[in-house]
Image (spheres, rainbow, N blue to C red):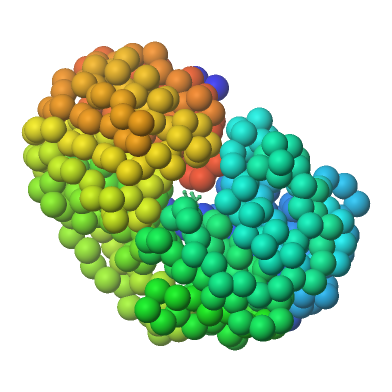
Length: 436
Ligand code: S3P
């Protein structure tokens, strides 16, 4: 599907964005293995989370949707899962496939996992290898690196493991395996990644301790809980950049998740001179869940270039495409390195981002592990493609708002993978029907 984006005069108004994708996936998975009822409010109804729901239903989990943005999961504990009658299809969702590997490795039945063309190209060895060390039986294409993957569930052994890639998906898959394994598993990360799983497992009564960055997990059964999912910071990121870079704009984005393992992009934009006010949201329930939320107030600002530090990369990995767009408007040379992970996301996000932003006049140089941008660039409208990647679709749309002339985006529907209603919310902030 094609969308036209015309230059914006300004953005203004107050909006609430959909729930966090990472927490929505975790709510479904952990609710599915807990005993009792888990109630998720502000659940994200998107392509990726629908894939998780459908796989869990095939495993016998009862998930109800009282409203489009709430879910009730009736879990029957670890023994409540059953052998699926057919192949489990994670579609475009790496999170779904990797979490399923950890969950099913320790069960007692057979399953085959696959995904769409993009997901079948993404590396799974990072999860499969440590699970094999735990005694799992998993095989697949390219020596177990690529889906379709077959799993014969069996009893696992505990491990001590230093996770060699900074990946919360790998960490979560191993936590799901460790929660079913006798003895204490100890995981260590090279760099801190998003910690939603640790927080949620703890709230649901799981035995998980984090001391000096080491995560110790003991076999536990979880209990169902009720919680409100904060707005997705990674979705807010596109609108934050749009608000900062479109002159005369002022917007408020309400109840955004502000977990510090997710908000490095906020710190980076502030260091670039971006005017972003944060109004913390206080609620008793949130303190137990430990997921901070707040409103963000964004005012258009002149930005100056910056370099992304290696330790910041895991905590803004999904925001790097839109960082490139913001950096194209900043004075000076901006640089991203140590971000080779971008090459194995839904697309090769370094190659495709550089290709598409160049069409719009961005002076961007591709590096093996990142990119360099010389700003500020006067962007021009162009015919661009999302390559089927949701974050590229929304980053290119953001760039179109402050380009000269009209931009046509091919593959615009990809936005629904993580941000349903993106176009409507944008139109709301633009005060008109700007994108068609
Ligand atoms: C996610 C972790 C990140 C991120 C993805 C969601 C998660 O992936 O890019 O969008 O929910 O755990 P990696 O763990 O592969 O870095």
